[in-house]
Image (cartoon, rainbow, N blue to C red):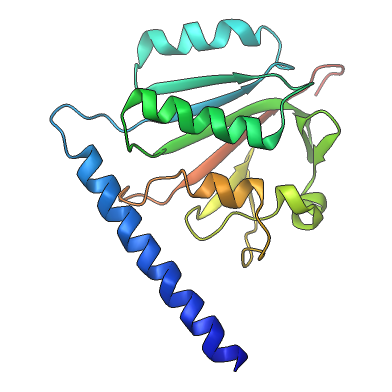
Length: 184
């Protein structure tokens, strides 16, 4: 009984995938459409408030999102990404993404009291692996190994739903951490 239930769930996931891919293709099939690139910037990054202005000068398809490291939640970040994507182009999904936050060798501070290490990302409920929409998460030069997505809703799984399904290249989230207190 369990195996038939999983097969049915997989069938619905495939149907959802195809439906979402079709909707995205229609929404983005306009002349002059440039796929969006999202740059998520923590307020803990030095001079973070200047980064959005600087990066938009060279490429208007970059959507900078500055978030409050101290008070934001993963839900706040996801809502802001979704809102900005719809402002950029209704129905558009992320084609490329960079998360720029505080961190150092082997650790990142995505939010206050949310340290991400390789081990913690695998364990913590709200930071667990992305679903199959995201092929890998690059942590500096080290790709984060991805396993099967958990049954629970997580930040990475929900973020993966905002990634493009029509992008011919694999979806990769680049993560860049910077030292605040010490020297590398």
